[in-house]
Amino acid sequence: MAAIPHTPMIEVRDLRKTYGALEVLKGVSFDVARGEVVVVLGPSGSGKSTMLRCINHLEGYDGGEIRIDGVTVGYDTTSRGRNPHSEAVNARLREQVGMVFQSFNLFPHRTAIENVMMGPVHVRGVAKRQARELAAALLHKVGLSSKADQYPAKLSGGQQQRVAIARALAMQPKVMLFDEVTSALDPELVGEVLRVIRDLAQEGMTMIIVTHEIHFARDVGDRIVFMDDGVIVEQGPPERILSNAAGARLRTFLRRYQGDYAAGA
Amino acid sequence: MRILVGNLPYLLQGALVTLLLSIAVVVLGTLLGVALGIAATTRSRLARVLVAAYVFVLRGIPVLVVMFVGYYAFPAAGLRVSAYVAVGLAQIVYVAAFVAEIARSAILSVPEGQIAAARSLGMRRRAILRQVILPQATRIAVPPLLNSALTAVKQTSYASVVGVWELTYAAREIVERTLAAFQIFLGVMAIYFLICYPLSLAARWSERRFAFVH
Image (cartoon, rainbow over all chains, first blue to last red; front, side, top):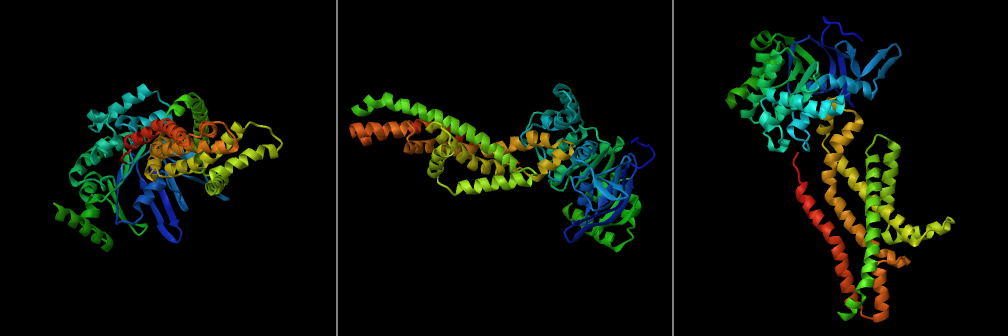
């Protein structure tokens, strides 16, 4: 299917998902334009991470539709119902969607540069020498050229997370998904990771960022989506959402997290 | 000690047979077990159930009994195979059951986040298994696998009971002739220890080498 440039990069329509009796996503709809940075805020258990994992189909969903660059994710909906895509189709989709995790998930048996080379070599079949050059450039970009041959266990959390970002970028994705990528970091290491993400935003990468860093959200977000209890409660530009938050649920959330921030500072 | 020294060449011939039998049992038993262990972690329900049943049954049977069954099973089926083959196959099958369990649990102990990260890169099932799961599972499995190899080497001595000539059998022959049981079996002990020593060293080394942080 040919991409039509003026369509949104990501379309989420009435997304629903249940775990047994628990409905974690109760009809979530939003778009992400090309080059747009959407920050998703919300209390724990509000469905943010699950939504993110549905977008690259790490998890299936029960209703609604997701499209990335016009192509449906995970299922084809026909008049006779939903047909799941094959694993090969899902894998091809994931090649285009970078993801960074809260717990880094670097491959501990590979050095930093080998982690970054993993996608190009073992998905794209790029020659090792060429992949190494690409990986070196990406490590330089995240400020870790000097750590290329270190194993993840020797790196700080902030360094590991930057390698993880470089690893995702090595697939030259159309979209990047960030799942609370600073939540597992010591406070003094948060900044170096956020700087890398901010650079990506300035380069025009389309991103969805799930975070609890409200100042960062205001800083890099083109739009903020506030989720609670499996639905989007409010969305809009950061100034409007964060400055004069209309709803009670968002106000409660902001008071808690900005309160934490003030208490910690 | 004179009797032991005089019979040492004969004992060493037996040791050679023990060594060859051990290598065959450990190598083939481990390969079969690893294959079964991998099968037990696939999406195939049939494979999982079959491997689970295999492990469950064999774990509950003494190796000596498995060997007797192996020894008599071939003639019962109208096949003529040497005692070495019968006993070797029985031990391979037995070792594989324990190895399968080691391999299966090592594979399952690779954290879910590793697989999620690999999938998010677009890696296919086969690449994930080879590049992400097996290298990490191997590090987890090597120390227990070396332990299982040690046990397998020592279990080859049971082969003497069904008339397979190897180190223990050779020792019993000498003892019957010379009645110097203490001397001879002291020598046999030393030989078994020497065969197992490199494996013991490897087991200790691997535990330090592969102790590794996620």
